[in-house]
Image (cartoon, rainbow, N blue to C red):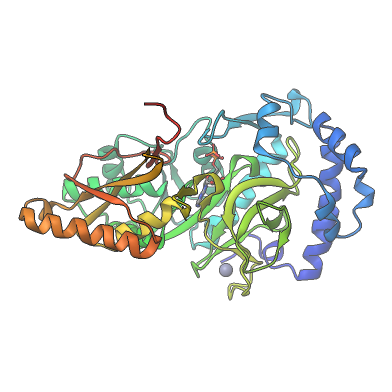
Length: 430
Ligand code: ADP
Ligand code: ZN
């Protein structure tokens, strides 16, 4: 199913021509921002110097730090009078940055969300519970307007009050739910505690943080849904920029609206399909806040294969942010890899916390993980065996010795929005 068949399936040539036209427009729009005027002057570049998409590689990068320095409105290319909405980032990695939208931007954003939701088979026949934060976080309102645009029956439940969320799913006959994967697990857990079946649910959309394929299996089984990955960030309007189709093998990017590159984060060199690196995005239709070659910090790659659904090139699921990557005694580890291993062991739950300390000049990683109820009431010697097994599985996959602590079910923190499972105490002075 397509929302906008024509634009979603442009031929390579049509797409390249459209991207080039829009890239030039974006550079002209960016020239209204003092930061970019200086940057482009220093690079000796003007919109007219961009003759092909390859020339994009000559443009300077924009970093999160630049946006922070522009706080609050330094990156707006239009007067505040034309800005009709403001959001901020979640501030996962530091001070939140501000993003602004013109009326046209809000229309563009809703249009992309409408494409996404239609792509996963949703329509005006569906009842949609939107369990993402409403407010400054882009997730709630972003999905809200897209879902209304395609005529879904939208329940703006936001997060929290989980028992009530479960009741609403049952009472309102909800068919599709949207949340962070961590909150999706919480919904499953509470439904199980209440002893209810969520019979009407068939689709789950999860995003805003990394989640592994084992987490997908878990969410699908426990909620009785098909789960789709949704990726975006405030700097690209919010959610909706990139989404899985029914193939669920990589995420489509809306290439008419974003120019996508993957670079080597160390050297800045542009990488080809199949090579993992940092995602760099130039939005092509953003009016209020144009950005040039924005370094997202997110790690992925362009996929080589064409998708049978007929839409454009996909990216692989996001492994995490480059600054999520933990370097433990020289070994690189993403928290999403730890999650993947833990979820492959049925005796332990999906709830875990990672603590990193430096002891006697060596990094030590301790993982606390909840075990399930049955194991908890089992024998102590079995627990000792289980602990060894968990540490062994982590060592095999991560190539790293870790210490594992098994904890009672229900004792680790639950998250309604983005989870924060890693506590790195190496910089702290004791
Ligand atoms: P912040 O950067 O402060 O968290 P945002 O709320 O804009 O602000 O979040 C965007 C970030 O969330 C992305 O850069 C990415 O790291 C993460 N993210 C969003 N969706 C996904 C997803 N589906 N998979 C992995 N990471 C995601
Ligand atoms: Zn597809």
